[in-house]
Length: 108
Length: 132
Image (tube, rainbow over all chains, first blue to last red; front, top):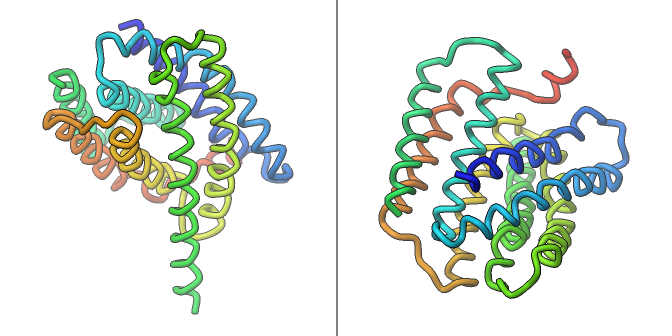
């Protein structure tokens, strides 16, 4: 559970690192790269301890599955915050898939 | 002619994404191989590997965005490349193969990505941010 919570924090920083630079289109590319990498420092401060704590009880593939499921949920929630609509049929289907992924990942 | 150049862009974007994801997966998991390493050194090592990642990832996003990709399509491409690179590097670094259930979990994630991509294939974060 600690691992999952840490993943949520790390993923938030990661998405900022990857997409915040879109807001500054005029920025010279090397500055965008360095800025993103700088934000990613915080991601790594959280992610590496998360992987270490998780590695005792999860396999590496399970860690990767947990990360992907958390990342997609964070992304979908982010979209909801922007659009504020109720989930569409396709989103419900994808939620079900994600729950399935979590279940199979948990079985290992 | 136009079709040729967009195909070339797609190819370049995927090549850049493959290289950047090799660095991502290495940054995230390679430190687990060296568990005697202190946590601070592990963080710095991983962040150092990630430095290489960003020189490929940001250009991939910028190039793709100028070409036929929306932000959502870039994210989908990244996730698919990320999972494929993970499976290969798990074998290379740790000599491990994903189990049957883990493979099913990856397939479910792929299903989730494909089903939301029907809704968001035209989504563009740049436009969203501009409109704010």
